[in-house]
Amino acid sequence: MVNQIGKASPADSQKQFASFLKDSINKVNQAQIQSDIATNKLANGENIDLHQVMIASQKGSITMQATIEIRNKVIEAYQEIMRMSV
Image 1 (cartoon, one colour):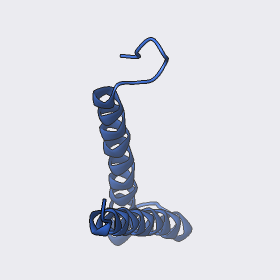
Image 2: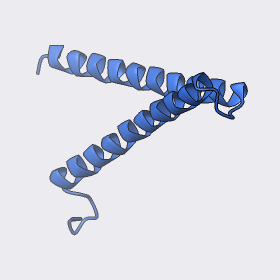
Image 3: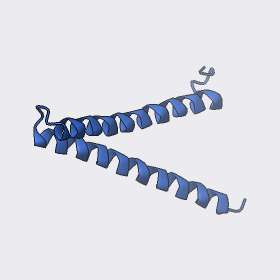
Image 4: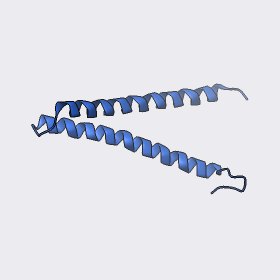
């Protein structure tokens, strides 16, 4: 819900963030699954070009690396906030 000033409540913001995070993780997972499917097709001798397999593999790898780096930065920021004295 949006209050009268036009700002979302903290609960709504948390739900939106959780939904965004879940969607993003699902996209990373889909990239990994597509990479696995392409690799399995190539290994089984199915009709798939090597460049398609390599592109799918790199997309999966890059999205996973980016996700890990974002997670590391979030944890680092959280730890820095926890060290602050108020």
